[in-house]
Image (cartoon, rainbow, N blue to C red; front, side, top):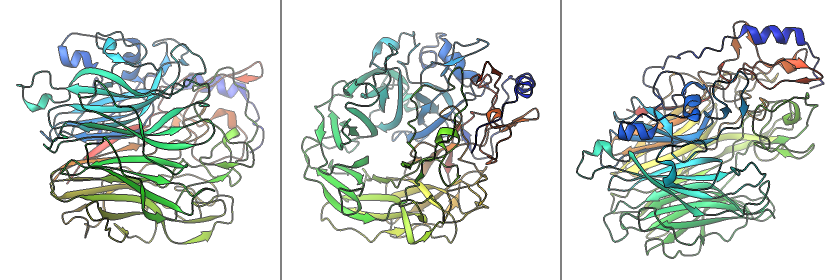
Length: 623
């Protein structure tokens, strides 16, 4: 991509042409929108929901009409009442501030959404977890945290009406370059234990820091990330314990898995316990079996330090007080999208569209995990979102077995030469990603042979998740079998010419015999998504988050995913990114934006509410 010719007269017209009035979008039958930043009136402060006393602030006002970005959803169904479903995500709805100004800047918080359904996931009311910058409600003083932004939300229920939201956090409220790297957990309870269970997990009680980062600038110190949470619902001596695991990154490049536990409903947390011995590890997940034993799994990366990419597990038989040494229970050929960075000239811009440093760009010639425009351009010319093989695990707390159920998205079969710098296991070679399942018996150490849940000829299966309850298993994944441009040699949703198209659906499968067999994969989404829209890093790269989520209570199940059905590329006849006028990049990934050109530089995006950033969280009950 060469330097972009500038046409300021056209851009001035473009700014005037786009109507900034937020509009409603229809929801496909069976799919529910969790993140209601869509001007429908479904965005209500949690304080008001609980007390009936009106409360509002500029962050919530912006969230109400933002049509902004949300990704990395989590969801959890109340084990005492399956009508109650809670969800969350990385929610960017409050970023553009000050609310109501003609020109807004990206200075507001990226925070955890709090999405609540009391009809089994059919409809949701949306708000933010209290404690965000700008929160002046009485709840704000109960959030004992120190951060200007938070993300990677995870949710767990105990069996007493309490829901726990875990998060990693960064950014200094004072505006310095410090990245705090804390992890913390918020507790929500039933306001009155005598009330009906429909009020479970509704009242905010407090947020407490689980582990602190080192507050070094630009992620150079100790930074905690990649969170996981689970609570004990077994009725054993461990009942009510909450377990929180995370990856600790350090400035020298080392990564380790740590865990803390709370025995008092999240008020206090134990000193972090290191679980891993390998040095390049991520994606922890926590399982609790019916006897109260605690298992933590994670992925190791081969890189230069391991013989193979693998799945490791560790076990505690004393309610998380101590853990056995980690052991490897599986290896796989990863399916990690990668390319070679080939940065192109970036047009000068008077102010950023996103927080500075929000996304880290790769230097020329180095490996890139996502690709887009300008400084995010890659050698292949493709546009694609970040994705790595992940390992997700769970256990059935109402079962007498000590089975751990695992899914992961790895390469299925032989790899092919791509003919470009793109690959899934290093540049130049790629394979088909499939969702594998196997069962590990924690009591005996035996495991089943990993098998693909739903075999298909075409398409990738990525971002899997699994849940288990009352001897019923559900698995979900993103699936590109209906991608009209599918080729194992190209990224998801990319044609041979680099055009991106709608390519991803969510599929599900069910097992009632411990995973020995699975139902045929069934599509859950009613609208296919293009995951490659360039909505991040000044509208230059796509970002889909790192995971999807499924939850069940017996046969009642709900899944949540990141969705782009409402993203706009054209409004009132104006299309795409004006900075690329005359450029050869025609990838179909540019979103609606408004810019002017003056004194040698472009303005920031003057219409962030016009639909170009409308990345949402959707979900559905599973039949």
